[in-house]
Image (cartoon, rainbow, N blue to C red; front, side, top):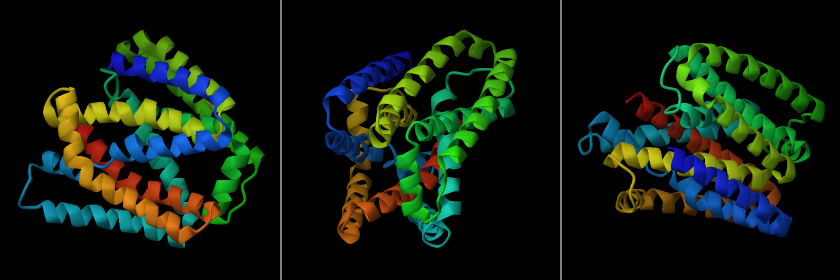
Length: 292
């Protein structure tokens, strides 16, 4: 776990360094490249994880596949018909998913309900930090997706409310968890590092650094250990081989979105909608994995 966090810290500083040398266009290009590789890959093996969780590797795979597709289609319908509701759900589900992945193996004791609330609160703070330091870009993307206009003051108010709740939640966790007390200073340092990254980076580049190096790669590590017992390069190759087809299908889908949209304004909206559609079932799968 600590090796992964050390890698996250190192790559974050590398991302800060690259921020000074790459143009905004190159940052966006590199950001999407990383999202299309490690970002999409970390969610491409969900069907294999479900099979492992349900102990139904052969006979019910078609049923599992159909269920997964139905969840994705429901997500697409939400974004098509009531995008503002879908976007809010996407943010809330992503917040819990990010917090769960980060804290699940760090906090070993304490009240489980308080722990779950804290995980959600942490993920929400991460997202709102990103939004707070990139208000104008967020406003534009929200408008593209939902045709709903939000203001900078609205983003600020929501951020500070969530931040206060997070500080209260952190104090409660500190009082209730011995394992949390041991790492709270270290974790607050990581949060300040992310705060710095989000402040000096654009929306896509800041999101990429967090999503790839603080979430996707650690999640890959967790999934490989769950499926194969431990992380190794050999087991990574096994994971990649089993995820390859679904990863390619996802990339083809994104490529079709780009061809259909014809311009980046529409593509931005469709791309985030696509990410949301595959995030909903992925978050459910990972939730079940950690329970297992």
